[in-house]
Length: 208
Ligand SMILES: Cc1cc2nc3c(=O)[nH]c(=O)nc-3n(C[C@H](O)[C@H](O)[C@H](O)COP(=O)(O)O)c2cc1C
Image (cartoon, rainbow, N blue to C red):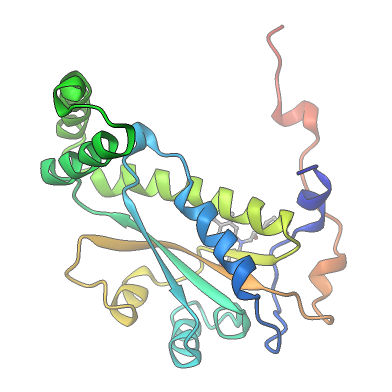
């Protein structure tokens, strides 16, 4: 993927509601979410994909009335884990054992480090998991752009309303951020707006 797709992409304001992302391409997008790296590899997240027109319309109401959730092809709510439990860590370690054919004993030190970290983060698991979720958002947007699929990352949402609409209330996951994906409307004037970024020498310093 060259930088050209990162110049091509922009945060879409108006989607073409008539166009849907083909299933095979959508599968690739989902795979990019699954492949997102995370601290310790713990993957403390859940991604809820919404294609139901009714739910997408409800989400518009929970998104400062922005139209992207309603008009996009696929809407994703990226949710973070609230409490990362010992049982969860063990289920993750178990997946390493079965995936790599190693014994649980060989992971004892790793287990100790992870559990120590989580204990230290007690009460802040959601915040920590939220940071991981933003990595998924970044990877998702880059992947979509590389496939010429449009997106709009969305923080202009009411998280508690998303949780209610998506049935997350009372669960171990809470909505962090949304991402609408699909195709830009030919009349979305933002597609032609010049990209505004601080110059490279302002945001990047070298210590050579
Ligand atoms: C985490 C995040 C949340 C955002 N939330 C919204 C949003 O709710 N609605 C919207 O229209 N754009 C939203 N944006 C888009 C930004 O305004 C946009 O990415 C930024 O102005 C840079 O423009 P570009 O992405 O078109 O290059 C969000 C972007 C990010 C990264």
